[in-house]
Length: 545
Image: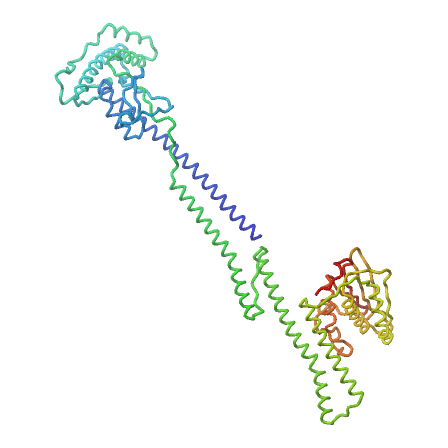
């Protein structure tokens, strides 16, 4: 997999994990806090209503309620506003705290009824139940008046429900103005009994008795309360930050671990390439880096290995070139030295034939040195070219004329196939040097009776110049080395018959400098074809180096 895709995949995985974790945590936190808020709200409402109902149940009045409201507001954190059903304000926690009352919440109000719930034993006859209800009505009226009196007098009291649910008030200190109810009150109030008897025809007998009880004690019982909790437009509770930070830390840790793994995968081959590059710099040209996979890092490793192989090949070619130059010059220079020493010592007579041979040998060495200089200049890009418009047909005709005598002497037919002129922008002398080298090689490789053909063709904007021979050909394994310096297809061919071994190297560099190509095809026993490809159009004729 591509390194870029792996990085992208890791980042996407981290982003998706972070998004999923954050979403899950937010939803979980929101749900939990909503549930906790709802549960806490219910508990707070239950506590507030319970304490207020207990106050009204025990005191028989709402006087002195403010301390209880302040305590409940402080304990629950709620803003509490208490009023009667007639909207008579009894207490407001904001006002009790000394602040301006805030707008109340839009939530539905809560009703608190302090009147007791009757306890009618199951299985009682209807008349017995009615009598108990009448007694409870009278008892509650008396107890409510007594409790209200104690409250106004500031006495501490306790209230406990009796068997019917009616509160029984007791106190350690009874003020003189508060008369404690004595004995059982008379329940035979004609009005009460008349109302209670209407319940005999009701199917919900107990419910009817409770309704009658509430109606008959309404004048003595504290009024029902309307409780409003909260503040309008109050900010909702925020989510807890600790779990979110924990998940964020976990995601960050996962990202760091992923980055460490990724950096390890990246830095390991980079470190190996650094060590290998250091080895190359110190001369260890055989150093390579291990490569596996097909991503960008692997491609970089392969490119590094190819670069190292190229450097090693260049170094080997340079050493081989040095050895070849030494080999090419050692033997003729040794011959020259030997003959010169013999002439100096008088061992050999300085005949004209000997002097001509020595002169020819010196010219050969001069040609080798000139070829080396041309090749060095060409490879360094310092070879000077004088570009003009050149007719390739005329150039081939001139090459044929120049090599006609050599072809006739070798018994080889030299033919020209150039049906029409083709112009290119080039250095005419350098192209003649290329063609002359190719034709000379072809003539040497062709046996008597063979043919060397100079052909010219054009396809579109490209010109094709071919030198074909019917010689013995070049083996396929030798073709890759054909343009190497000092390389000869025939190892037995000497300097006299094989040239310096630099001609094809120089020819390839000249063609390359003309933005062209040179290729070779050969079949053993059939012949060889060199093809030079040049552009038929080019820049205006200028001198260029």
